[in-house]
Image (cartoon, rainbow, N blue to C red; front, side, top):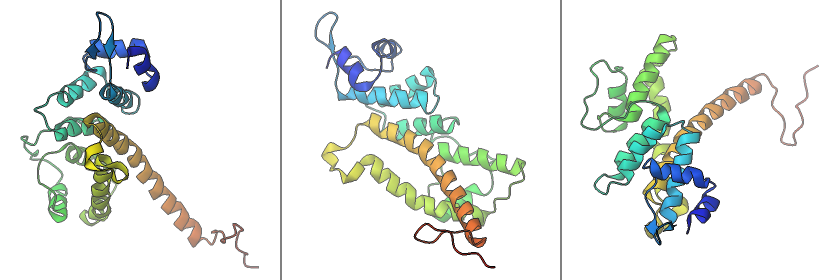
Length: 229
């Protein structure tokens, strides 16, 4: 497709596409003439990823450029791009598996990983969890190891199912698996959207249980139950 069609199908202006090309975020198209280039699904996927990172994650052009450099490097695995994307979504520094775990890390984290059978290595979410637990401790919000595990156990199952959906949405066969750009984009969107979903569902549970305890739940036909007296 030509530039105008890429703009139309992606919803990104021609000026923005040219800007992303100049900044090294978008791979060059196949040259047709001196001024015309052919673009394909890869470019549309990249534009979708850029828009999510800019609008939903609030990432800078420099941060997106670093991620795109990894995606465009055939010698870098997709996990490296996913780690950077997680850092952008969680707004924490990127990590490397070669890094050392900080000596002053919250003491609840390593036992949690061991209990769940997760690798005891530095990761972006591990850094984010350490920062969150420190913040909660400063606000005197109690989080016991048992409480932490109560939240983590169902999330382990959910995370495994999420990864399967990201890799093969709707059970799609491997030959139509999404591109690396789409995988990373879904990971970012999922991190942001499902974080909000968990907060809302937890609040809904608290509200619903409180109402039920107060006898304010409705019957199946939508009417309020009769009150005593």
